[in-house]
Structure formats: structure tokens, C-alpha cells
Amino acid sequence: MLSQLEKLFLTDHVRFAFEIYDLRFDKEYTEFKMTREGYLMIYRKFYPPRIILHADKECTVRELLSILKNEESKFVLFIEPKWSRLLNFPNMKIYPEILMTCDKPNVFRKENVRRLGIEDKEEILALYGQGLGDVLLQLLRDNKTTAYGLFLNSHLVSAAYTLIELENVAVIGGVLTKEELRNRGLATSVVSTLTKYLTKRGKVASLYVREDNSPAIHVYKKIGFKEYWKRLWISVNTDEKPL
Image 1: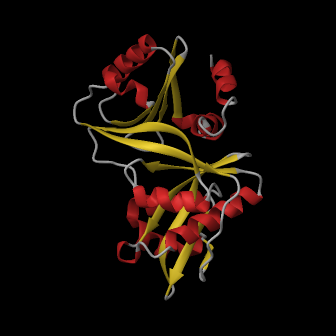
Image 2: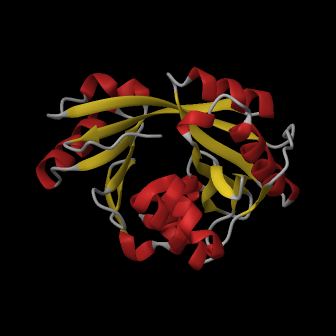
């Protein structure tokens, strides 16, 4: 069954980037529950777990959702928007997201944008806080991310990094600018520089953005990102939400 899934994943490296990465590099944290043509991919490296539901038929989606209800109480679920009418979890919050991609970015350069490393620990924690900051620092220690940041007066004020990287696609995340410095083009500079770095190495740069985040979508389109796909980011019994 896993070999069949791998064949499916390789039909679209962009859409199935997380499935490919987790199956190859984080297998010890990854569990698949399969039925008919569909699957739940449960990723337990973090708590609450992240769960991807994929299926082509409504009967399969219903069965997978039933499994999920019986076995998990607190999680973040990713599912296609067309199945939203089947969702009825308690304490559920839904955030529609757009997957965007870019292979030829426009670069908006500013001074003091550079690659981040573990030596930037204190500034990373100051910008992202303990939770996300620790995640980024661990990725840097494991050499599993490319991160860029913009500094003002020697302080990190805007940053972005790759959540995962494959040989031909990278997913950018953690795009964050200090609140008092937003709308000044800082994130545009950071993301465009990171995107240029990735595309020069033969990767398609991709990222997810909330559908209601018009300012961010405007920035990404200016860089050269285009809409590729849509999904729902669903928080069940958690206070988590996408950036």
C-alpha cells in the first residue's frame, strides 16, 4: 500500500511535498491509515498531531473521518475544501488556505538581509518566541532548513525559512515581521531573497497563505507567486491557527 501511495505522491511533488518528506525523512513520526483509495497521514513529531486526509470519493472521506473521530481528540487537520460539508468536529475552527508557487521570483533587495544560523539564537527567540523559535533552531541544528532574516539596529525584525526541502521543491513558512514594522516591505525583501536562493538551486518555491490574508497574498504575487491549489487548515480542540 505504501508503494502505491509513493506513486501517487510523485505525480505532484508540490501538492504532496509534506507526504514525500515525512515518508522519506521523518518516518519514525509518521503513521498512515489507509482505506480504499484514501489515507490519513498522522504526523506526531509535534503535539497536537498534524493530520492530512486525502481521498477521491465521498464514501472514503466519511470512513476516514469516522476513524479520526474515534481515535484522535485534539489535532490539526488538512483537507480539500470540497469536503467541508462533511466536517462536524466539536470545537472546530476552519482556516481556508491557498498554496502558491514561484519559479522565477522578482527580488526586492534591502540592506541587512542575510542568511540565519544557530549563532542568531537570541534574536530568533526574540522574534518568534519560545515555541516557533525552538522549532527553527532545531531545524538549523539539523541542517534541515534555509532561513533568511532582516536586521535593523542589529535586531532581527523580519524572517522566513523553509519548513521542508526536497530535491525539486521547498515549502516556505514562518514568515513573520515585528508588528510595529509591518507594511514597510521588510517581509517582501526577506521572502523574495529566500525564494531566489531556492530557485537558483533548481527548486520550485511554495508556501501556504490564509485566504483572508489579502496583504500577504499581495506581497507574494508581487514577488511572482501564483495560486496552485487550496486546502482547509482545521483546528480541532486546539487554539492553534496558521500564521
